[in-house]
View (cartoon, rainbow, N blue to C red):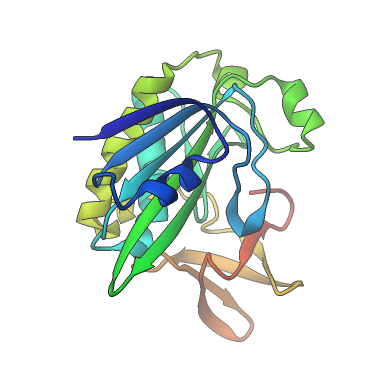
Length: 240
């Protein structure tokens, strides 16, 4: 059962949970009407207004912490397709949710270690109602909202709770329970990509997803795996 805390405004739903995780139960969900200081992967700012749905889920000592972020991507896709079964939601490895070529959702999972245990706080931001002008002013040409692309107006509370419940269940079972579905949705696989790390770039071909969630790639030197915590991946011709 998800324990839901609803806030009107907060600096960061991830920070809220990190500061209170010791006293909050496993499976606590925090949603906010407005998040003022959210962050994306690799320290990027998370542009937000009240058109975004920001929320975070506390997972206490999950059995498979290394693949929670990939499980989260599948949870978001499944929850959105339950609302819009005619749409096809894809994943740009490791966890950007793509609809009609645009980024609809970002995910940032953070770990908090204590002794030999580890809690995971999974932050998710779904673009629900922002208009094209918001993304233009924020200089996010590849971003869009659910309402922009489909005309659908989602119930914020129900959507957050549905995603959180799915993520909680997937995280307990592990990536193996959703790996086939993840691979089916992953738009990165089968493409030539740029791997960006330490200020440099190299080209490779994305072959698949390893059981640990790493991206399996190949180049003229053979096959290798890359970790989302260390590199950024983009398509050669566009964002995906």
